[in-house]
Image (cartoon, rainbow, N blue to C red; front, side, top):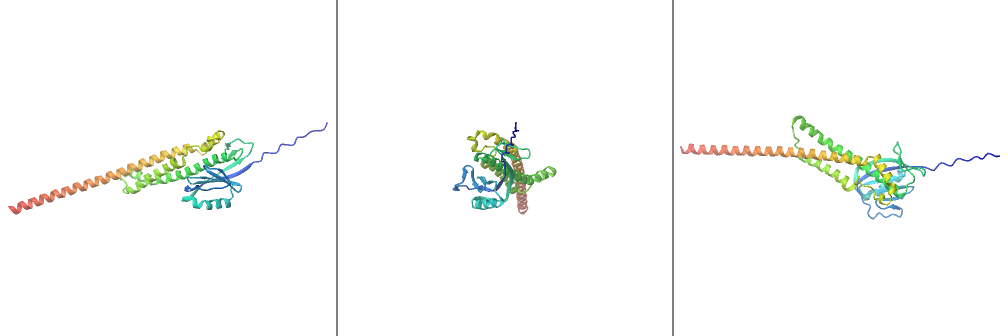
Length: 275
């Protein structure tokens, strides 16, 4: 009887793509950006060559599977649509491992494993990457604000000397308010992407990405830091105002004393002339 040998089944084809999230400006104006290769409208996602581009109105472009030349061409094309371009482009990179035998998950090395890159999966992944790069940028901004406030608070604690530049304190308060407005008003870090309303099966992928990048925890930590910065700046501003008020009151008292002394001088001078 002849031996029957069974050939091993071919390994499933896998693809690895690099995804880059770039914070390019305050906003990206996607109004009227009509393309025949659009695969999603909010956020706007479309194919370019063998890769994909996902644009978020709060200033982030996620480029997936593009070569360096294609990335440069895409960013140049977006140039006129970027409102207040960033002086320093922030970027975060991730690897997407696509294979039909895989479940949606994040491996220990940080690679995003998916069974396919359907438009819905693409948007869920891009949403997490975009929020991650925005959080990284805002964390750096808040650290910069802390670098301004901390020495002033330390000086106050060490020698009891209040800062004299009220305008600097007002700028710090404005910066902290601006960071909070960006996170809650534009980015909505803790909100789920709209695509999940129709694709409940991608909830687990979204949750895993949110956990991997610690989106909620970082947003909460940023909010606490912003509150501390705002309260510290307001306290220092109140101290500056109180110090100014005290100096003003002392000046008024001094003027009153001078006026009284001058009045007495005139009175005694008048008495001397009469006598």
